Image (spheres, rainbow, N blue to C red):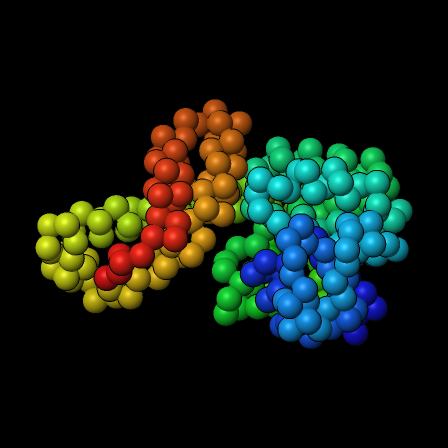
Length: 260
């Protein structure tokens, strides 16, 4: 059993992990939005400030949007206990994680780059996690103690885990964007069923799933893909397809009426 864990951010991932691990009051949580009802439902300890949530924490999970990840690390650094493990589980570019690591480590914390490699639902604590960084092996043991059971350490360099995640997203989120573009055109032309049938029997279900991920999480996915574009540019690769994915993911957010 864990003694305590601190969570920064209590969206889908944070709430799913807390409930799946039955962390209850052992989890101290801070979110910039009012999540009082969500805290009560999960049984966690909600905190009014980031310093309160991180007070004497030995393990910290950062679970925010891609656009907030660096600022959150900078805000957490002055509050972090010496030797605390800071698990950056956000979907951001390797260079973003390296910058966050520098801030956390200069404050006396120990930074672990964590890539969450699949949707947290329905996997919960069985979601695949890739870890890298100097303290990744110890971090893996701590996460296992929290109940995570699908962990792989991929190296000692911060940025390796996130590189795998970012480059993989070129394909995963790109296919989603292509699916949406295909279905928009197919419905407009009145040939949606025929197009899906031509692709194979699994494609009606697959198209529905890809579109649901975009309509439910398109804004968050667009932010992630902006980090993917930064990753590619740092590698000297022009993110031509990725830029289109950013536009389509953002355009599909909260859209209704498009399904296979």
